[in-house]
Each structure stands twice: as structure tokens, then as C-alpha cells.
Image (cartoon, rainbow, N blue to C red):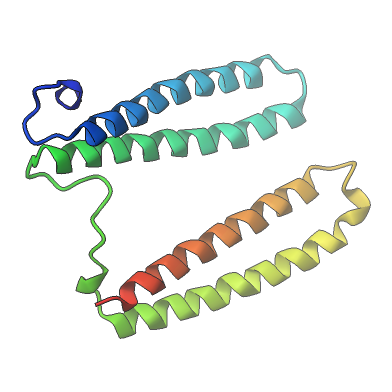
Length: 162
């Protein structure tokens, strides 16, 4: 990692060094945030707060992993290390467009159905919105479903490019 920070790194642009520094700094900052979340969860007498903070911890762990993968991929690609980057290149042209289209169409249909079901469930939970965590959890699942749809659309769009 320090190779990216070294000004004398041959072939590494200033933009790459700056981006790498941003990514690795973010990873370090996320580590501190993660520790704060863990301490808050352990210290809270509220089971509900501990539960919610643990959901945040799961997201922060994933964010930490993604930033580390971005930094690793940038380092690998910038230094031409010959290794496979943690985040693969956009190689959708290698995939069979028709197979990707069929798969993403099927998965998008399922995700949209899931979105409709979650919306119905959320309406059913209105009466307990202020007395349980259930409405919040369904809201979070709706957001995840929208994220899944965005990922599938991205794959679908880029698989069409030749």
C-alpha cells in the first residue's frame, strides 16, 4: 500500500495517488466509526438500540471491505502488479448478452415483485409503526430491493454494450 503513496512510483499518476490516499484514509476512519458503533452497542441497556446499531455495524463492515477492495484494485491496476484486482474490470463483453439479459430480466421481475410485497407489508404494519422496529426493517428491505434493482440494471445496461 505504501507504494502508492510514494511520489517516485513509476507510472502512478497524481490522481491515482490522491484517490488511493482518499480510499485508505476512509478505511481508517471507518475503522474508528466501527469501533464507536461496537462500543455503543455494548454499552446500551436498550435491546432495540443494540439491535439497530448491530445493523449499522453490518453495513459498516461491508463498507470497510468495499473501500479496501477499491484501494487494492487501484493499487493493483496502477502498479501493474499482474494480480487480479479485488474489484474486477468491466468485462461484460465476455458474457453472453442473451443469457445476461434473460437472467437480469428474471431477477428484476423477482425484485419488483418483492418490492410490491414489501410495500403491502409496510401498509399492514402502520398500526405498529411507533411500537415496534418492524416498519423500519421493512423500509430497510425496500431500500435494499431498490439497490438490487439498480445493480441488475447496471449489469443489464453494460452487458448490452459490445
